[in-house]
View 1: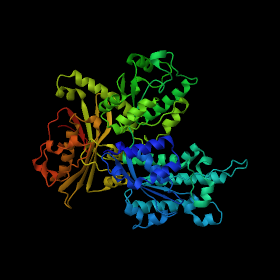
View 2 (view 1 turned 60 degrees about the vertical axis):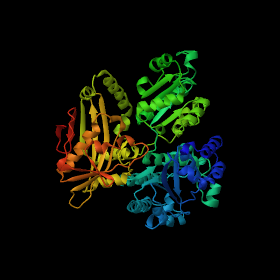
View 3 (view 1 turned 180 degrees about the vertical axis):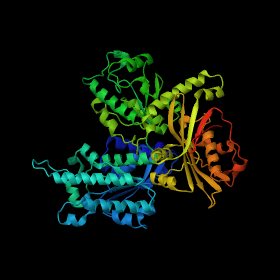
View 4 (view 1 turned 90 degrees about the horizontal axis):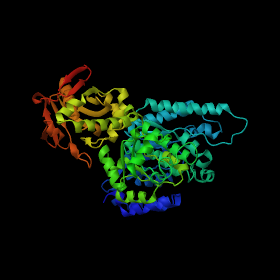
Length: 605
C-alpha cells in the first residue's frame, strides 16, 4: 500500500491539521518506531537529514517528520547530543558520517564558535568566528558528499533603546557577509536565511527564555514548525521533491464571489477590500510564476464567463496566457487535475491544489492523495500569507530555465497545434526547425545541471541524484565528460534540457561508462534524445574511446526509456548495454541541426 494511502498515516495527519501543537506532535511521534510499513511503502520517498546545533534541537524532529510525511516523504533524522556539532564534524568516524546524511543543517550562534570570548562577556570577533566556521565547512566537505546548509546568524531580539550601538550592527553585518562568501566559494554549501525568518515571525515569538535557561532549548513551540518547514523547503529543493505547479480554483479563490451568479462585473477584485486581498494573492502567484512555478486552473464554472473575467476584467493580474493549463467545466476536480497532469506531462506529486471549498479539498485528498491539498482559510486577507508559508516551491538556485518556464509551456501549445496541422510526423519534425547545442558543461551551467539531476524522472536512465559538490567534482575530473544539451526551435528556446555523464573505466580511457543520461520531458518524442546520445558517442570516439557501456536502472517512473539503448544499437552485456564504436553508425536525423562540442561544427545527422 502506498504510504500516502496508509490509514494510520491519514488518521494522524488529520489530527495534526485540526490541532498542530507540540503536544500532539509528541504523542504522534511516539508511534513512529512502529511505522516501518509506512516508511517502506511503495511511493514513499526517503531522505536522510542531520541537524547539528549548539542548543537542544530534539523538539524539531517530530515537526520535520510529520510535515514531510504530509507530503509523502519519510525523513530519517540524525540529532547528536547537546552541543556536539564540532566533535561530529571533525571526527571522520563520528555518528554523523556513519549516518551518511543527504542534507545536513548547521545552526549556531556566533558566541558558540568563540567560547573564550563568551565566557568573559565580550562580543565575539567576526574573524575568529568565520575562521572557525570555514574550518568546520571544509572538514565536512572532505568527509561527506551531503549538502551542508548553514543558518546565518540571527541577532537576538533586544529592546530598541534610544541609544543604539552601531558597532554591534556593523559586526553583525560582517558575520553575514562572511558566511555568504563561504557558501559562494564551496560547492554544496548553502545559507539558510535564519535572520530573515526570525524577523518575519518576530524575534519575541522565536525564543522561549525560560526553556533557554533551564534546558538550552532556544526555540519556542510556536516557532518550531516555522523553522522545520523552512528547513524542509531546503531539503525538498536539494533533493528534487519541490512541487512544480499550483492548480487554482476561481470563485472565491482568485476573486471574491461566484461569477455565474454575480456576473463578471459583480465579483470582488480591485483596490478596495475585499477585492484588494484577492489582488494581493494574484500578485504573489505571479511572482511564483516568475520563479518557474507553473499555474493552472481547475474550476467548476461556465467556461465563457470565467474566461471573460480572466481576459477582460480590468483588475485581473493573471491572464489566460499566465496559465499552463485550464480545466473549466462541471466535471469532478480530481478528474480535471488528472487531465492537467497529462497535458503538462507531470506526475501528480508535482501539484498543489488550492480551493476555498472544504468539500472539494477533502475529495481531492481522498481521490488524488499524491497531490498536496493544504487547508485553506475562508478569509482572503490571509491568502497571500498562507501561500507564502508553503515551503513546497523552494529552489536552491534560480536558473534562466526557471524564469522562462511559463513561456516555454506556452510555446509547447504552439508545437502541439503545428503537429495537429501537419500531414506526417516527419513533416512536423522538419517544420519545427530544431537546433541542438551539445557541449561540455561550463561552470555557469552547473546549477541547472544539478537541478536536472534532482528533478528528472521519466527520461532518466539511472536516476542517480548528485549533490552540487559531486556535480562540481565530475566537472573537474579529467576522466569524466559532463555533457549538456540545449534545444531551440521556431517557437522558442527550451534552454538546457539534457545532461549526460560519462566516466572512463580503464586507465587508457578506451572503455567508458555512461553513468547518467537524462532529459527534460518537455522535449521528448522529437528524436532530440537520439541526436544527443549520437553526438555524445561521436565525441567519446574522438577522445579515443573504443567501447561504451550504458546502464538502465528501472524506477516507478522511467519505464519509457527501458529499451532506449537497444533502440540506439547497444547490445545487452552482463546486465548492462554495450556498443563498440568501430561498428557504430549514427542515425539519420536530417531535421536536426546540431552544434557539437568545442569545435563549433554544425552538422546534420
